[in-house]
Image 1 (tube, protein in one colour):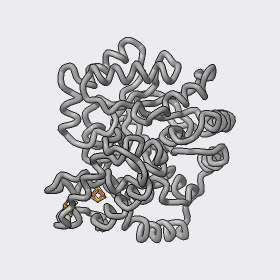
Image 2: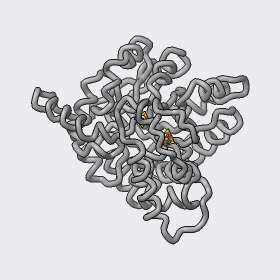
Image 3: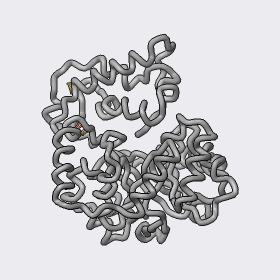
Length: 352
Ligand code: SF4
Ligand code: SF4
């Protein structure tokens, strides 16, 4: 398997990483088979999160006794140091390890969220303490906001930054993110490299990302067969020819019009709807399964979408011209269909 060095962290990872979000919806025995296949194929990078239900636990169990030579990444959405440390400690226990190679601030999508994490007693101070104590090797950050990805790279505080990079994210090559990360030796991890499961053509999608030197895609998988396919592409990506770029342009014209990048340029909504989460609802269901996403009933942030007054301010702001109102209606229809017969309406703590 080819390998990639993640910036100044110095961590060497396989050219593709496995994302653990889907592990929450498949049984432990299948997770074990997926991991065994990954190890067999030379995949050494595994990424999960405190917030992905029992994903850390299942990954830890599947990797029992096989820790050496692997790079483990997890993350916490806490901004205060106390909760962050609790999540980290639990992650160490669940992953059955003494050290997590990359621990990330999860979903830092606004300057305020970063500010909260940077306060005295905040998550960044807790992470630094954990690094001094040998519980974490590198600090990373994940975000859906291009501005925040750039800001994180420039702070010099983070060894890795994880941001959606795929052939749909046309803003990436134009933004300077790739060059800045390279110059400042920040490792870039590509989140949703297959467009959250909407691109279908894994070979084309991953080969597109491999044109960007030093970027490591992390892909959510559910079967050993998918692992074999990913490993084969990572080992020998396709050199893209003009015909491939024509296909990419076609995909951008079709999927690109319905694919929410979670960039939040459409906010604020006057009634306080978290638009990207509502649009992402079908992806959450696909990745984690309805049992987890709706385990406490319809999430409050989804129910809130019923209050949309169709002012379409959001649609005017969306740089990708998404039909947001229609997309939210479709999420609500799916949620109602899935939740039929379910009980309460408490919020589910799901973060993309
Ligand atoms: S609807 Fe448009 S602006 Fe809003 S988060 Fe999605 S892609 Fe970004
Ligand atoms: S159309 Fe609906 S979601 Fe969009 S800004 Fe208006 S109220 Fe909010």
